[in-house]
Length: 134
Image 1: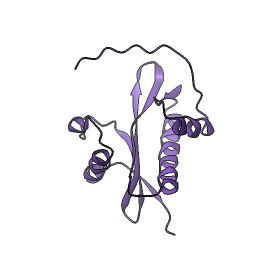
Image 2: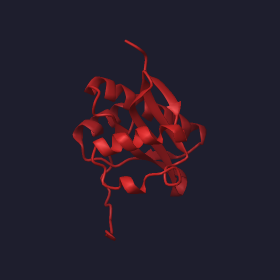
Image 3: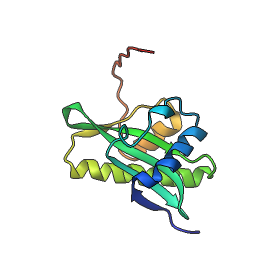
Image 4: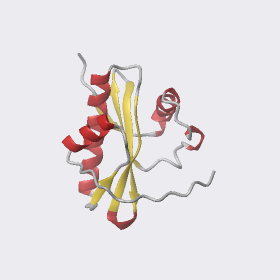
């Protein structure tokens, strides 16, 4: 089996990212472009085909948020998980290099929460308030 490669996200990967988001029925796909994506991002490739992609969006207080983390539904779960893990590990290293205080992420998926815990994330119970504008 070929190795999965991790490369920084560049414009040439935008169509691949949009295809993965469309396959996952991402509702806000019309807002995704190079201007709205965070500057720090990676894509995992297997034979030049995308397996997973993700970004690190800097937010207030010296933190960053995992953003637009997506995997390709046409690959099996083991390959997708490996691709996501490699992307997240690269983003964690960038956060460390930038000397950020931490990374936040949002999920209610138990599988994602379990994997996040193995990578060192801690689930916190805080109140989150939201105002829907649409």
